[in-house]
Image (cartoon, rainbow over all chains, first blue to last red; front, side):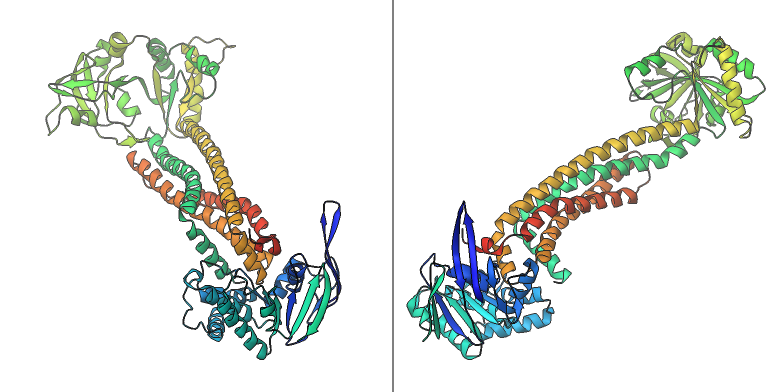
Amino acid sequence: MQSLCKFYEMGDQVVKALDSIDLDFGLNDYAAIMGPSGSGKSTLMNIIGCLDTPTSGIYELNGQQVAEMDDDELARIRNREIGFVFQTFNLLPRLNCLRNVELPLIYAGVSPEEREARAREALQRVGLGDRITHKPAELSGGQIQRVAIARALINKPSIILADEPTGNLDTATSHEIMKIFGELSEAGNTIILITHEEDIARYTRRIIRLRDGKIESDKPQ
Amino acid sequence: MLLRETVIQAITSLTVNKLRSWLTIMGVAVGVFSIIAVMTALDAIDKSVESGLTSLGANTFQIQKDPAMVFGSGHSRNFYANRKEITYKQALLFRKYMEGRVRNIGFIIVRPANLAKYANRTTNPDVAMTGGDENFAASNGFAIAAGRNLSENDIRTARNSAVIGSELAETLFPSGENPLNKFIKVNGEVYTVAGVFVKKGAAFGQSQDNFVLIPITRFLQHINENSSLSITVEALSRKEYQQTIDRAIGAMRLARGLTIKDVNDFEIRTNESLIDSFRDIKIAISTGAFIISFMALLTAGVGIMNIMLVSVTERTREIGIRKSIGAPRTTILRQFLFEALFLSIAGGLIGVLVGVSAGNILALKFNLPPIFPILWITVSMVVCSAIGMAFGLFPAWKAANLNPVEALRPK
């Protein structure tokens, strides 16, 4: 992305949530975006995740110009290219694990048989092969987050985008989840993490720090 | 996304709030029920009307003071009420003028709701008392089952002879007792049973056999001398029917002493005109029922919209999640639209089911054949679907256009 800007108008004031951001993520990148609250990291995540579009600038994802797209095209990109993992998990409480994980495939138009097979495989990969008929309420926080990771994986996205994935978990579980991210990175996935915890960021290979809508630093570790 | 998935999702969502879904469905069901029940009953009555009316005799028409049914204001009611009665004298003159041009002319006066007694048996006060002459039986399609008809002599001498309908005979003389030459009391007056008519059956869901026929002359002398007569005329043939009506109008004007500038102060009732009058009533009732039901359905539609809006607000997060993992707008729109449609169609089906049952129970009570008003069922279902669509569209549109960032923001 180049000179990406996102402005909000609040009354007669313009808030520059993102101010001329230039960023590149390569294949198999494993990066953490850090910064204090109000630094623009959530806005950046929304734009990277195609939930929102920038006010100006260029965002190219796998050769596709995202900034110009309408709602439905964005939905298609989110479905195919992005796997979300949220701090609050965001599973549908009425569906069991299997149904939650296969949801993106429904919107991708995959047949029921293939959906189920792939969802089982994804759940096995995060170590929940024996919990597929449980509903989210019957699982622990760490297990729910693993279901969410399985859902993010299922459509083989270009980017796995995790917004404070350990924010609601205790330390031991957090490190378990980070181990899974580590394994996924080894397997060749591109992962972008948003966090404000240094010890979580240390699991990644690259740390991008934001402050007041600008990049403060961007270095590998 | 597959249609099947959308339907499954819609039904799953509805089952989460079972009570709420049922209440909304009931709203629609009541609206549809009222249309279907009224229309089923009307169709059932309609079917029996033509057979009931034509049982009068194909070539027969009646002359009366009033039309069969009067619509409109008190003014038009008074207009008919102020007409002079058709007297026995006028009727006799009319018969004289029509002599030889017709097969039959009968006079009757009917007084409904009388109480008949024999020995210790009493009927309900629903026996019709008919004043007629010897031609009554022939012109009204009645045959004699036992005894004799009224005679010319009965009429001339205003004798207390009576011929009774089969139902009245069964009530007063059960278990095969012979009614002939027995003395019965109707409204306190004593009559000798001279004969019994053959059973005719019901028309308009009303028995035609629960009556007593007495000489018209006696009726006028003893019961009400100011009654207006009804004259029944049977034409010689179908071919001469219209011609006979025209001639009868002339004869009646003469008998009533109308001058050339007076308008007719009597009505001709034919089978057709009775059917027409019935149609008018039917149209009035169905229009009323339709308007009221439509209002009810509109209200139900507003109910659907209300519930769907609540549902969208409650499920903002779910919509956000679905959008974030790639649900396009049309899919979300379809999901919510299906929920609204499902509510309205389920309500419609229940309304049709209960309505057809209720209408047929009503029809059964009137001894009418069962009926399945396919036209009204179709109309109701179409209207229901349209209402579900129309009122579901706004909430669904609202859901589909939610901003995923806003929708996912924790509250």
